[in-house]
Each structure stands twice: as C-alpha cells, then as structure tokens.
Length: 621
Figure (tube, helix red, strand yellow):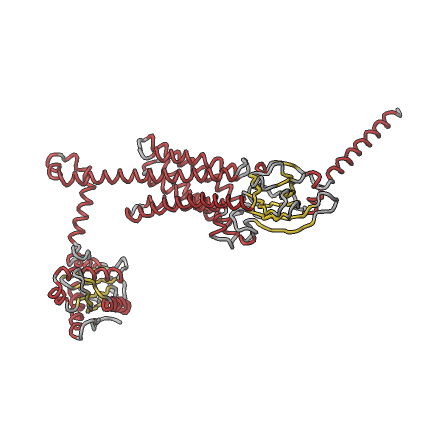
C-alpha cells in the first residue's frame, strides 16, 4: 500500500522536471535557436532564404523584445513556404545575417509579395561572441496600408537596405499583419545584384505593359473606324486586366496613387470586376449571343448584373470578404464564358474555336496565380510572371480572332455589294427567291444614295434639297410658343467673284471647301444643320439656340474667317470676309418666310459694308 503513492509522487516530480526543462528551452534567446547566416559577395543573390525562423502571434500582442527573448514557440521553414491563407494572426520572422567580407557591404532584404497591409521591421546589431543583448539600430514601417513614400526604397516590392561593416552581424525582425492572404517570400541581394534584378524586372514589366497598351490602342482604333461596340469592350477588358495585374504587383500603388493606400487596396477588387464585365459584353458581341440564344443570353446578362452589384460593393465591403466573393464570381464567370464559347463552337461558330483556345491559356495561368495569391501555393512571383504571359496570350488570341472575324464580315459584305451591282436586274427578273438574301445590301445602298442626293459634292455639306428637308422637319416639330426655337443664319462670301476672276475656279472651289470646314469646326453641335445653299452662300440651322447665343457663334465665325489667310493651289494667299443675316423663328413662320427674313438681313449686311452680321428686326433678343 505504501509503494503506489511513492511511485505516483515520483512520476509527478519527473513530469514537472520535464516541463521545467522544456520551459528553459523555450526561454533560450532567439539567437540560440536561429543560427546566424553568413553572407558574402561570392553569392550575390539568394532567391529564397532557407530555414527562416518565424512565430505566430494570434492575438497580435507580442513586442520585438518578447519575440527576441525566445519565450514563444519558434518554427523554421523555407521562405518560399511562408504562405498562409486569410487570417488575422500576426507573423514574426527573424533573419540574422553576418557579413563575412573584409569590406563594408550593402545588402537588400526583399519581400517579394507586395499585397501586405502592415510590415514592421526592426534591425538589431548583434554581438555573437558575448551575452550582450541586441542593440536596436533602426526601424521601418511599410506595407500598402501606409503611404508609398514610407518605404525606404521606392520599389513596387518591399525592400529593406542593410549596411554591414566588415564582419558585422545584424538581426532583422519582421512583423507582418494583413487582412488578406499572407506570403513572406524573402530573398537577399547585394546592391549590385538588386539593381540588375530591378532592371530585368522593369524591362519585362515594361514590355508587358507596352504590349497591352498597343493592343488596347489597336482595339480603340477599330472602334473609332468601324463604330461597333465589340472592339471597345475588348479595349476596356485589356486596360482593366493591365490595371488589375499592375495593382497585384504593386506597380499601380507606386506610380498611379502612391499617396492613397485605400485606393491601392480597392483597385484590386474593382479592376477585377471591371475586367469581367468588359469581357462579358465582348463575349456577347463576339459570339453573337442574342435573346434567341436561350440560356447563353440569360447567363451573360445575369452575370453582368451580379458584377455591377459587386462593383459597387468593392468600394464599401472589407477587403478580405470582397476579394473572396469577387474571386468566386470571377471563377463562375470564366467557366460560364468558356461554356458559352464551347456551345457556340458546337453550333458551328468558326471564330468560337479561337475564343475557347484563349480561355484554356488563361485558365492555366490564373489557376496557379489564384492558389499563390490565397496562400495555397508558394512562389508568388513565379506565378505572377506566368499569369502575365497567360493574360497577354489570351488578349492576343482574342484580338487576333476579332480581326479574323471582322475581315470575314468585310469580305462577305463586299461580295454582297458586288453581286448586287452586277446582277441585280437579272436576279429581280429570274430569281425572286434569292431577293430576300440581298435586301439588306439593297437597303443599305438605297440609304447611301438618298444621302448622296442630299449632299453637296464639293463641300460635303447638305445641298439645297437636304436643307429644305431638314428645315421642314424642324418646323414640323416646333411648338406653338412665342419663344424662338430655331435660329436661321445665311452666310455669303464677300467679293467671291474676284477670287474666280483672278485665281480661277479651282481656287474658288478650294475657298468654298475651306469655308465649309470652318463652319463644321465652329458650329459643331450634333443638332446643328449646315448646308451650301448655292454658289458662295451657306446656311446654318441652329435648333434650341437663342438669338444672343447664335449671334455670338456667328460673330466667332466671321472673326475667324477675317483673321485667317487661305493658301491657294497656285501658291498665292488671300484673305476673305463673310457677311451674315440672322432670323429666328416666329409664330406663323414657314420655311419660306424664315429664309426670306434671314436673306433680307444678309443683303442689309452687304449694303452696310460687308464683314458683319445683321439680325432680322422681328427677332426676339
């Protein structure tokens, strides 16, 4: 009976002794657990530090002294494996370094993941040969939750300069806190190697951004020339993808909004959603998805509606939440667009094959990139370079497919037009069944002919017929109110006959075209109607324009013509003036009466000495 209590008590003593021993091990200084790493210019760069000491601070309550004391569980892991998913835990990292070169040396400790909110760094001088405590020699605060100019080095990545004396040892303590995923891929470079690496990165990024801008400008040019929305959506997608990748790499924070950490964080989810919205609209146009396409039509518009909601939410919802939601939305949208492309390809849409191929290339890059961003895969920088290649390849393939599609449509339209011109009469007589297939081309040709019949071939302005139609249409919609709604101006070139007599009719034609261009430039509202009434007379219809506003516009035209000289084809230069008569619409006016009152005012301007404006007396000023 007396043996069991003795054995039990002995076991308790042994267990308590074990706890004391383990506690003493934990209480060892950090220098005893993490040996100093020797660095030398013989190895000018270390792409990833191995066996880095780190600790997790779940309550974010530690101080640098607490961490250095060693009273906290220390783990060791290669730097490219310091990858953690979204968490509120703070992570402490310790990097002790010794300069083994006999000369002073500058090194740069680089953190290759830029999307970290708060990175606090303390640098201590170490004395490995004694028990003296580390001496604090400097501290820095970095991260994209702080202004960019707080960084010790103006770089899109987080870089810390370390200046060593010969044989000197420094210990770097890093605390990382962030609302998003945490990656701590640490690398080490001499000053020369850091400069070379920065130059290489700048060259690669410059080439990528330049290619993106060129493709965006090409698509914008297509939009301006063709007046169809498809190239515009492609250009917007290219620009948004470029901004998204620039935000993820820290470039936009460095160059676009360095004084706004809030915008640096918001830019990532916002540009992500904008890129997807642009691509959804491009997909609809490129693949010809309409209401008849069934589920494809509703899928695209449904995802676009969700995207608009997420776009607004990206400005207000916390980053850790919205980035996960937006990324899930991106994955669903990308899968949906790929599905639409596959469905269109199975229906025989030839261009859909290029569309599907572009998505397969992009998926490969963004799969690994997403895993790296959210902390499920190491090597963020390597995955970032790969996704740049994947995104650039997709943009190139989409633009190439777009060009092929537009070229095919243009060839088809030219064939239809040529066929309509050469065999229209025969087809009308003998092939009534084929008439429906050519109606679109005929309607377009008829519209062009009607437009040509209304245009003055010399100046490109409306002719008298076009003016009459426009004036009749305006007067048919005028409201029976006493306030003027239409202002009618007649311009006439002063002494135009002298130009023809002295310089020839070719010079006169050049003068008329020059005056027409002046009117187009100075009276350039879309609602304004400009016409050449005949000879050297020009007419301007100014809807919704008061007499005083019209007077200011006309005086501007007269002053411009008077101040300019015109270069003629024969090398001579001349100066001309305009006279003008102005009349505003009055209740009971017709096209004839309105024109007559303006024309009478013009003759008064001629009689009063030319180069002036006369307003019809009945006008309301």
